[in-house]
Image (cartoon, rainbow, N blue to C red; front, side, top):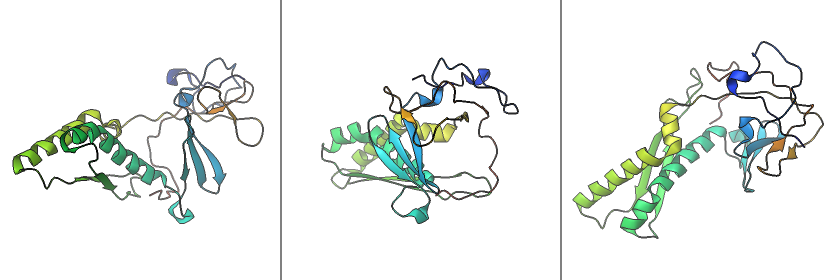
Length: 207
């Protein structure tokens, strides 16, 4: 099996043209992390990583699923907690209880989340006022320094999209290294390398 590639962004075809199927020699950068979703129903997807973890993704009305917006918020909360974990355990004990809550509505006009509210909850009742202040400073510094998700959301990131064609029906063949789908050498037809820059028409709230 041969992995699909669309090449680096500067080598991709212009979005206005549809090239013939390229000779596939390298994997697309999108496959590098072994993360993907498969469609399992109307607006419902199953997310995977190469380690075997899965998460259901869909609209709120689908029930026991995470919406894409919820997953983004959970990622932020989890990243903040993990960034502070060692410092809090060192100061408050290995069994310290920590919860991180996050919320923020989307703006349909801008098709984005303009503000996210995050709160880390930890029991500091046994500490003096000065010690509480020091712990809060440590928490903020740890998150500012180490939370990759938070830093990405604050500074924004370019998102490069490639659209490819896969021959055959059913789930893609899984790559032996990453666990992600492998596209055939004759199937992939990259048709776009454009970034997400403007709001989509037909906005649907994915909170």
